[in-house]
Length: 106
Image 1 (cartoon, helix red, strand yellow):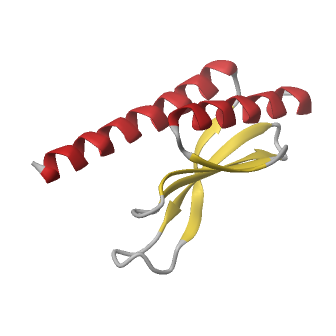
Image 2 (cartoon, helix red, strand yellow):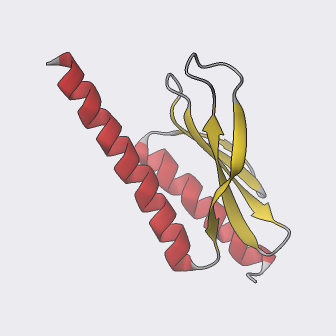
């Protein structure tokens, strides 16, 4: 179980990585929303869980972009390494989407 100060540090780090990557970032000390691609609804809500860790929920909607909501937590972060891996997932998935768009335009 991480301390409240450590959890807030991890959230700030996720925010900083998101800003560097050009993602839309919203939130504060206990919850952060990271929007990678608004058009396709690719977003995560990362928040402090009462169990002493960060949980990340992915935005979900139907095939027509309706009925959107944050689903069950898909990631739990309990260490510095977990936070680093989550940031890697954000960066890698964004890079894959960017490559897909380039190929679609060709």
